[in-house]
Image (cartoon, rainbow, N blue to C red):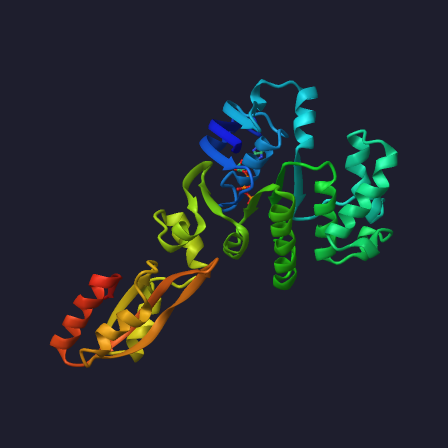
Length: 342
Ligand SMILES: Nc1ncnc2c1ncn2[C@@H]1O[C@H](COP(=O)(O)OP(=O)(O)OP(=O)(O)O)[C@@H](O)[C@H]1O
């Protein structure tokens, strides 16, 4: 079932100063998010990610297009009806946005108060939520007494208070260290699997996408330039922007500077092998080289794992009889994609 659907959605902001140009923050975006999915939206600063999420959250009206959340077109609703829709959508932020004047308990109580949930129900609901995020012992602590990871857990408990169907996470782990990031991502995965909540994660960190997302959407200058299952996109990115993001995760074909470095120490023929098809094993590929009496050394690259499926690029230096090397290159090329390093 499709839970979020954007059809030709655009958002244009008027010029911020007199005589300035309008800003086309989101341009003609088509996007579907299925119930139960975790979708990662990536893009450089200014690509339109936050604006897109603010449209889904009904915090900003779209300039044009249709935007359905759980079957309702938000662009046709008035403010009162939008408030109801917002109860179905929780949000967490990079800077946590906790109320400093309230304890952990008070922060989680806040959305219940706004939604008019009877006070008698608060006690049970809040203690369930704090147990779920692992902060039962911090109920009476103040935000300033918490670590970043704990603050984000409070943010998650607060976002879940009204039992939303959707959780939007805007750079939710960008202010956290790597270890705490892993813990928070684990909690988000639990939110998804145990509560069945659909999650949209905005991030510039490919590790985050790799760890929890089912699908990735790449944005550039307000448009979606590429989208698909994480393994497919990471192992064979088409667009330049996507390639640059994936390169932060795994070394691909060496660039000009890296080739210069490699050439200084490696005089043989350099060949990059790209692995993504699991029916071809690395050992079968290497056997084609060894079987021809050609020597090789791994000089560049890496292999990444996305939920048990591996892909990556390995650059080899091949040495030996020129005809045998030629043959090995041909045989390997029949099994995997290869690129000669000039
Ligand atoms: N309220 C606003 N008024 C005018 N322009 C805006 C407004 N909000 C966003 N923009 C502009 O829209 C474009 C997209 O911004 P947006 O914040 O959505 O990008 P982003 O991909 O989330 O970037 P970042 O990762 O830096 O948050 C930018 O050029 C930004 O300056």
